[in-house]
Length: 312
Image 1 (tube, rainbow, N blue to C red):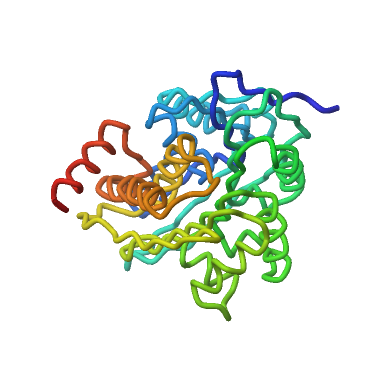
Image 2: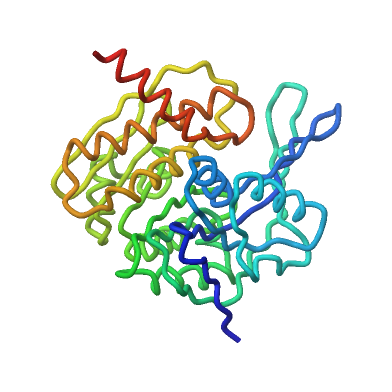
């Protein structure tokens, strides 16, 4: 039976994808916190004051309750049908004495068929949810429904241990990208997907699939935004790094925040630079503190104003 996953008309962005618990285990014990790239993006949008809904898959358990509480703290609406698993997904990093990590995943992604009604302004999807069956097919169906009715965005956030064999994962990525207006990926994602291409060729290849904008993040080297008519390079903002957890997701949240106002039609170089500067600034705030804690709108605005003053 098809059920409706309907953000209220006041919700401007719908995020689709996994939410999970990240666990860091050491000899001294373990620490866990809510994670999952799409959930982080939704949380970041909420922190920026954007009315946002999340369609995900959780268990009715302690981890699921922890994630729900975390999302509620940023006013993220969890859509009906999102609590449908036997247990909530988790990813465990087991740290050895020398600091090296071994990862263990307990991830099940199964999203029941849904329709989106009413349609929000932006539909965003990403990460494991777009590769792992049986839920990935349901995500693709939702993006297909949204295509042409909303701005559709995608961040593959490649996890090689989970996305399967390369050629199949590449085919899945390209199918998803063809449904989208904006694709954001990291330089590591680009290298894994297209090892034979340089970054400019990757952007050109993805644009040929149909998106209007490709955004490539490059960590400490900033970001590159490429449309069919323009390309801009955005330098990184120097930051004292606590950790990089959630930095790419904070970048994505700020990018979506900017796209709400600008869209993707006939973006000028100046508009691309504005989008890029805001997204890079959000990532810079995120790396300054431990865990996936994106900036508030006030924090992001303050850093952008600081950067503008410094440039003048």
